[in-house]
Image (cartoon, rainbow, N blue to C red; front, side, top):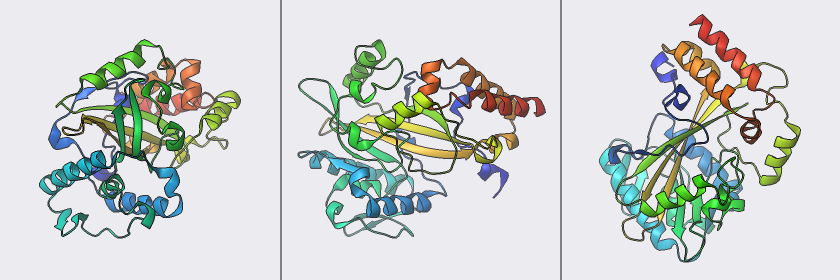
Length: 311
């Protein structure tokens, strides 16, 4: 792998995105979906999860199939135009060149599941209810970042974000998010989030009970102390757009996993390491507990500061 291929695609820890902030930015429609050399391995992992645990990675409410089909149609048109060498039109829709596998029979007719098999992103549909605001009404979530699709299914935004410090029901950020969803019209937006994990697993679920246990007991992710060997930076690129016909909101989540050690080969490693360490240092105890970094923050900062000084 060349140096250029090894470098992270996104580095929101450089100060351009702050943890525990909304941080929405306008998105060029041409950049809606990201396709890279990892497309086929990501799709293979989605197929494995659909085969083994379909009920944990796909949910839908009755009455959402029209919105799901709208997603599939929009996505197919975008991919054919934007990535003509990667996608081909078939008699039944759109296919990925070189991809294998099929959906289990229970999901074969679900348009959102079909859409999820075209891209690396996960797909979540939010719908405005008569009361309670926007709810999660359908989703394909093969690569969760420490949350459970089944636990969030059917719940409104303020409940979905309840475990996030400062974003629970009644908080100003929760109200702002609902208002931004209400005001989202033709303009697509994006935001970034990041965390640290101790392996390269894309499927990284966590139930509310597991989160409480992690926050209470504060275990180390790296009991052998070898952060350089095991730490991965998990970057989430999230996009939101309102569907023009059904007016539901489509939320996409693309996961990028980069070994922490790769920053040492980055031409801007000193700047990145200093900013990364500063963001970790600024987290309060509740935020550290939520991220599962309480036991490892100081060691991570030590690695990053050493990287900055070597740069």
